[in-house]
Length: 263
Ligand SMILES: C[S@@+](CC[C@H](N)C(=O)[O-])C[C@H]1O[C@@H](n2cnc3c(N)ncnc32)[C@H](O)[C@@H]1O
Image (cartoon, rainbow, N blue to C red; front, side, top):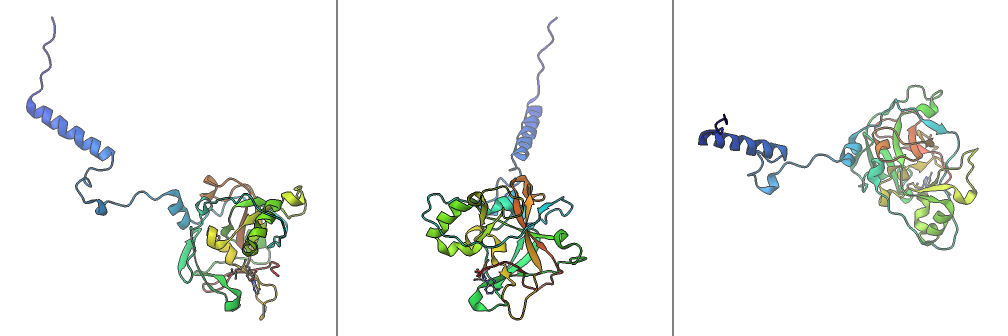
């Protein structure tokens, strides 16, 4: 015998309809917000970039630091044909760096303002919180990570060409492969264009101890590290990179200094 067709009352149908429409609305995130005017809508979920600005990198990350010395480079060359674009967010840097205003980079607070060296030497980077280095003599290269030295990477020969056209960029170019044992040819050595204005590279505002009076002591150092940066930055940036590490305890209000030839 054929079973009778299953008949639902109108009340049951309405109840099911309401339940379905509610479930669907929750699924697309509009249930109780749907009737609000547009400007009251909640902000969207933070992007990786927003999160990375506020997050301090994991210190447990094993670093393979390559011994060597890095310095700003001087260039001469002919002409440029390819200038790379670069997104500061891939290394957790800010799009732009305001002066005289606190910013958070890699989970620490900093301010960029006129250097203690004096106005004619431009800006410097100051800590807005204490950064403790436990044993500054024996752990020099194990100090806390401050932030990366970021920007588009060029081979030296291409950078030479570009800097010929833009001589104002040269003070921020950092050579990566200058350590003993590097097998790269001179012209293939990689150079980071770390212009802080164009690329949010806060490290580009760090001044040198060289020639300072009274003599400034270096409290940080940039190092070349094989492989990606510590989490969460390694998720989007997979290459070798340069980091700025604290080498001595830095107190809130101290200006960062490292040793590099700039003249
Ligand atoms: C990487 S930038 C540092 C940020 C720079 N003060 C600025 O505002 O752009 C290097 C330049 O800063 C200046 N500078 C860095 N260290 C210095 C020092 N010890 N004495 C004088 N000027 C210095 C020089 O003009 C140098 O070319």
